[in-house]
Amino acid sequence: LEINQKGDLKVNVAKTQENLIINTTGRLDTESNTIISAKSLDLKAKTIGDGNNVLNTSINGGSLSINAAEGNVNLVNNGVITNTGLKINTNGDISVENKGDVAFNSIVTPNGKIKISISGYGTNANGNEINFKTNSIEGIEYEGKSLGQNNDKIQMHVSKLIVDTVSGG
Image 1 (cartoon, rainbow, N blue to C red):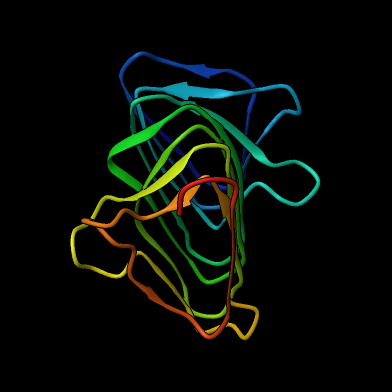
Image 2: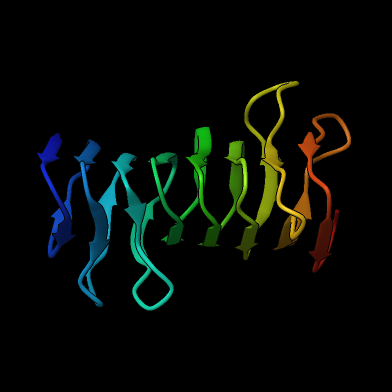
């Protein structure tokens, strides 16, 4: 299923058992109690959610790809992100909360800070490529049960790193 919109898009209902692609030339966000639910999700917009109204998704067992051309990414996902993992590309700040495990592909922002909080385990989904990259002096703040595994490490290019693992790590 693919949705294309010129300008801003505020999603009221989006639910499918298939892969979902949402493209908008403006801002993408959801109504306060709306959850975008799909097997896998590919989002393209100028900005994704904001600090007051995050984009709520439910991806469980699929991948999540986000491209925010000009702004920030503010997202809460409920479920396990696997397959090609979580991939985010933006010029702004990234704030992601996930209730479940996350396989990280690449999380890239040239100038923004990265804040990731997951209730599960953080693993590598892209082999020997860089998983996290930012030039921001604020760097990355990560919270989860673990970050990487002994046989499949997470690669980073950052100036500052704060990691809080509840167990494992």
